[in-house]
Image 1 (cartoon, rainbow, N blue to C red):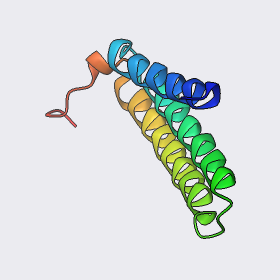
Image 2: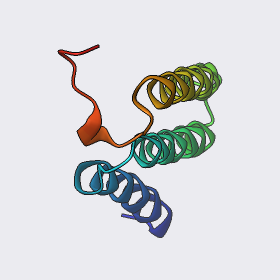
Image 3: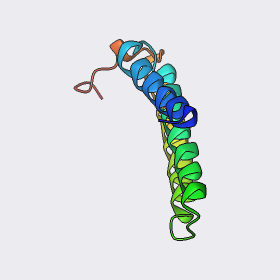
Image 4: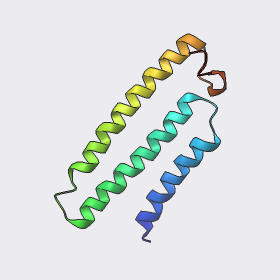
Length: 98
């Protein structure tokens, strides 16, 4: 495993660990998801460059577009939950009360 692959694997795993262990606030969960998506985007971009293939070049851009949509939907949910519940703590959210 090259150091570049190790760095992006570590970045993804750190984002995943942050998502699983530090689930206090919705904003921190969204930031961990965004970090995971950015590490996947950079890894896919480098993979496309290493293969010298044009066939896979739209894949990172499509993933970046989905990541932007995910971020905007997450921020909209953050605003909606903070307005209705008064906080963004995940323990305060109950799916049965929504």
